[in-house]
Image (cartoon, rainbow, N blue to C red; front, side, top):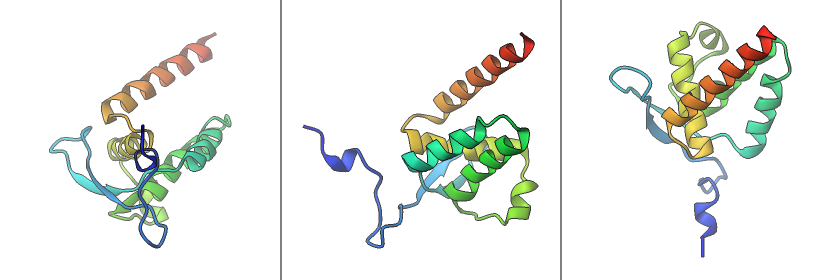
Amino acid sequence: MVEISEMIFTRSEEGILIPQEVELTMLPKNPKVKIIPLTRGKLQEIHAQATSGTIEEKIKADNEIIKIGLIEPKFTDEQLTDLKPNWANALATAILSISLGISQKEVSEKTQEVIEQQELELKK
């Protein structure tokens, strides 16, 4: 029988999600960062924001993933807006990876599928 501990994220005694050190496999030299997973509710909230239709809301949702999930290093809001796209993608992918329990490669592939599907819809 499956244990509850296998089904939930680990929290500290204070109730805070425990950060994990993760390699960013989408970047050269696989730099390490500390991140926490996004809870199911937070993922649903960000997904709703990302699919709202406006480009501003999509960018805000992408930044929210990093703002919430990245523990170390921690960016200011200004630094977050200046974040290089390759780093933003790698960070968001790593956070989604531990949040969903799938590899960074799988997250990246699924993201690419969604982008291609959206491009097809726009061409119609």
